[in-house]
Length: 177
Image 1 (tube, rainbow, N blue to C red):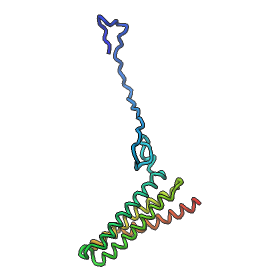
Image 2 (cartoon, rainbow, N blue to C red; image 1 turned 90 degrees about the vertical axis):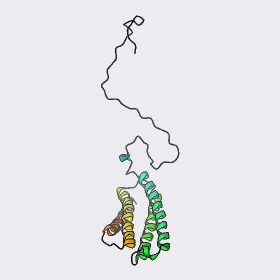
Image 3 (cartoon, rainbow, N blue to C red; image 1 turned 60 degrees about the vertical axis):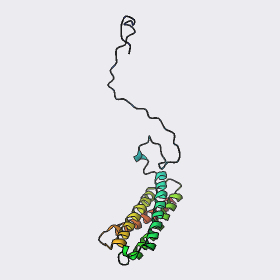
Image 4 (spheres, rainbow, N blue to C red; image 1 turned 90 degrees about the horizontal axis):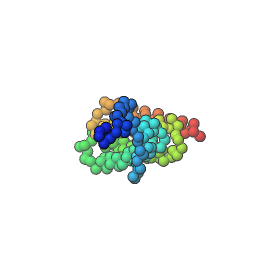
C-alpha cells in the first residue's frame, strides 16, 4: 500500500478500501489421475448424481462383485469350519445363505452390465432393493446358522424386499420395452 510522504504525492495515494461483500471462491477443475469410483465432476453436488444411472450401475457391479467374493469366503468357511462353530443344522443353513448371496451378487453384476441406457425409477429402485435385500436376508440367515438365534425379523424382511425388488425390475423392464 502506498502512503503519502515526501517522496509520494498525495494525488497518487489511494486510501484503503473496505470490502464487506462476501468473498467468492473460484474453483478450478482438477485433472483426474487414474480411474475413479464416482463418474461425475467434483464441483457438482453429490445429491444430483447419486440417483443417476452411471453411478448406480457402477455401484451395483462393485457391490455384486463384493457379494460374490464374500460368498466365496463364506463357502470356504461353511466347508472347513468344525461343527462346533455352527448351531444345530447351521452348516446347511449357512450354505443356503451363501448360495443366495452368490446368485444375487452375480445378478447385480449382470444388472449393472446390462443397463446401457438411463434406467427408469423402477429399475433404479429394484436394483437398490436387490442389494439391500440380499444384505439383510443373508445377514439374518448367517446369524441363525452360527448362533441358532431365530428372534430377528431381518431375514424375512430381506427376503420380502428381494421379492418386491425383482418384481419392480420385471415391471421396469416391461415398461421400457
